[in-house]
Image (cartoon, rainbow, N blue to C red; front, side, top):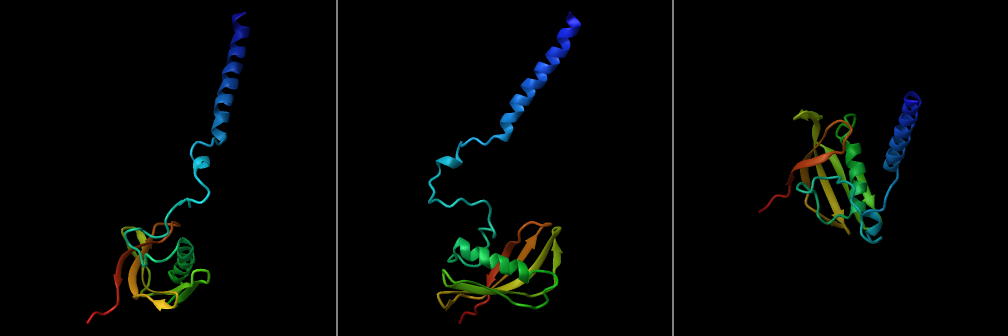
Length: 150
């Protein structure tokens, strides 16, 4: 009699384990359903907030700019400028690599210059370095204006 109850106990443990783990696959609307539809949700940043090329660009502008930057920084792009444009916001610009790729702190990096224009007003040309680790997004650092004063 004791022997026949052990398999039943194992089955019960298995059933309860499966039921409790099944809840992990369900999505409960804890927080995301309480957000208003008009608030944009940011899932990651394309550029480091402390190293921006322009604070006047929208998220849609940055997406187009980032795609162009990624193309400009490709190792097989030698001195080729890559342009981008967002016709909705009248923002546009280009990225031009300055040197071959190099390694810094284990990340693949490349120096570049950027020219941005918003509503036909050209902004200062900027120089920066973009680095990435593996397949991650490029992170921009060492940003400086190339406009001469005086």
